[in-house]
Length: 116
Figure 1 (tube, rainbow, N blue to C red):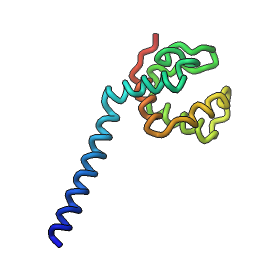
Figure 2 (figure 1 turned 60 degrees about the horizontal axis):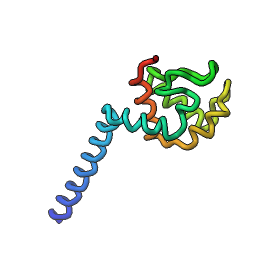
Figure 3 (figure 1 turned 90 degrees about the horizontal axis):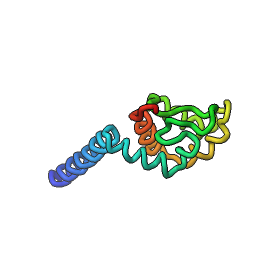
């Protein structure tokens, strides 16, 4: 029995370590780098411009320097089609391709960018 308890505690410790380091990773500049790659791979730059700083159309928002939490909330609203104003329908399909981790990475990248 003590061996089983020790094994359970070891497994819990490993799981806690993985979760902790995963959270730390997502708060580092490396997360912004993966966010930059995702921003470009997912086609975001096509409308919002390089780094989210120069939108293609005046109606499209400038995202560079925007608050990361705000961006995540908006992406989730687009994904669930709760946001229905302006050009929202264009974003529904784009946001539907993103999972929560990708949204967070992209948001952190955009928050770290400066407007041109």
